[in-house]
Image (cartoon, rainbow, N blue to C red; front, side, top):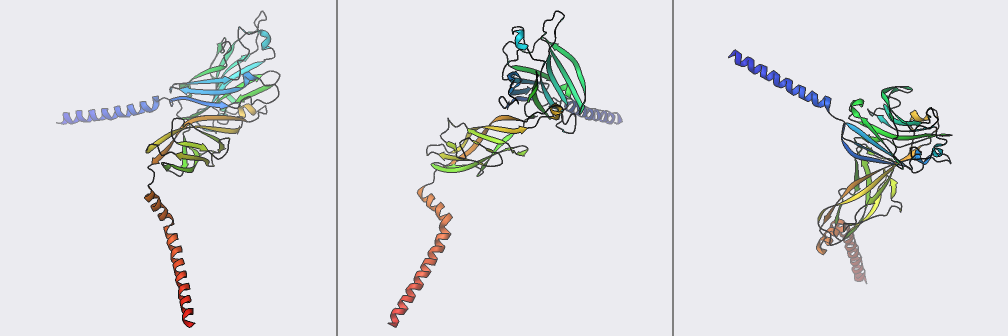
Length: 380
């Protein structure tokens, strides 16, 4: 009997140990968040000065990750004059090119260089071989910042003959997230730096990972409307972080829907997200009863995004504008059209008490007048 109890205790302890180890393994070896392509648009040709360097101007930055590897694509206004098939004369004046991403791996502005914990970049510098021929060689650097001005290289710089193919306008940067500790929540920013006779830097706004979720709040809420009814509604964009103070652009995509939805706030479709954007909605008599979904293309414009102090420590860099676009569904509940009796019933529910009060007052006043009139007639 004692042997059976001993075996039972041993098996119980082993089961508990297996459960604990399994739970720890899930926590320790869990990947970073997996996400589909996230895109941010940068203001077009927003570089300062009259001599705009188009291959230093970011148009779009895309990010995608399987939880292990982060891939970033930086799309430029034009391809830099670097490569075997480009004339050496076109490289004249270029001292250095640099394209990279900054990562806030813990979403904490108090760590690293004012929140920036890592930088991954490709750099081209003007170099010549022994025969005096210009070398097209890029160097990849993976850097960690522990404090402002204090950094270290995490991996040996890697050489790449050319990260641009002829006429291509994008840079692909991949990061092994295990080198960052597989962060569960982080932020990314892309930048481009060109040094010629002057130094120009273009950068995007930050993108949160996991990405910020957007949702549309309607006034009234829920949004219910009857067949053959017309009304004005208000739309406000909210996020998991609350209301935004950025400029919002609502573009309904209701070509396949019978429901008519038009903005009446202004012609530009833009308003501050803290203010309702007013739309006119009409549901025809033929619209089906039930829930309708209208896709809304929502664009969020962040204005005057300040440059990180990592860039602006020695140079004055003007702020930039960045744009994030999301497709969000607007839910509308369509109810059956009211019958004439229901219309009268609704009208009476709203105005019946007032009408009764006014009617009683009128009848009372008329009765008093009639009584006084009859009384005066008797005196005659």
